Length: 521
Image (cartoon, rainbow, N blue to C red; front, side):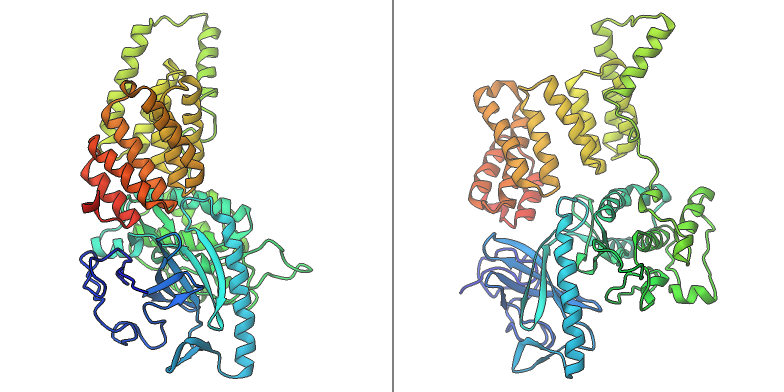
């Protein structure tokens, strides 16, 4: 079978076996060449489960080797994690795909651990609806070992970004970046899933700046709980400087507090530039230093980094300050409180419709100043003022939904978009924005009917929207179709978007996501 994609990035090549013009990976070497892949790593071009082609190795941890791969059915790049415990597994040079476990005693122990690896991966599929946690698509046995298939996320890790820029984050920058991940981890904990390996190396930043928590192959399922009150144990997994004391113990009590410690250690590293001592060393001498931190932030981290699990913050959501308007329903409570205050004072609203419109556009103008600076929280606070004077304005609902979507609060974004749909059910932009929320969360099947509704409306009345708005609808629909594997239709709609004025950057970004050549559009 001819495979004309790069084994380094899985983009399509003009000719097989060439140097990739996108990532620079040299595809001219023999797939089994040790210069290309070490002897214990699967050769490039290996086919797994009848449909996944293995590419280059992305890295190796204590329990496995991670590869970039390609799904031949869906025609999308994937990430494949192979169960390959360091020091316990090996491959024969003559038959390098099969894994051998050494002595019968070691083999029995490793196969038991492999079973746990598979079960925990199966449980991680529970989290497929969370947009800031990498999606696990499947798990299977082959070559006397096991494999997990996950989304392949393009971008750079938080660790790489910090090293490359030589720049630490401010407290505000750090919490704004990690807030969506913390929110999704809280939901994961409610479903009984503990990540157990949170660190800057496992947080990927996409080209859009969206943080994604990687390596769900380390996750622990607590769904069945402990038997007879005994502590829950799992495969040993430690990242020095980020793992809490219970992960060093044979029968450490793993729970949400385990991820709390690792997240606080990550935050501490991002803000201070200093990595914590291993938790075992902190028992002897604790060098935790909060100089340069604000008092309240230092106290938040100090509690989250308590060595003893029982002294530590127990819920990860406690690390997150209450986001703007998250404790109330601003569609109801804010407008209601304004109405009550006016009624209570005996003063009726005095503004005419023209005055309301003028004030609302003043708010939009002020909010736009923050938008160009990517200061989304300030933009949100400004737009929320509009609810006091125009709680039933469709454009305001769309703008609020867009800001919440950019901040990663997707449920709140949908709430505003649904309100906009109630106010103006014939507006195709409303349906496009609802589709965008689902598509961002990789729920493309749910997104598709909303995009199709928007396109039907545009075809029925093309003068009701601008060319730019049509381009955005077509461009977003193209990305949705591509993610669903319909690349032919994706190219057609991306070409239509281009004709309507879709920006070059947007076209390039969509092509990068779908592994399409922009020259074909």
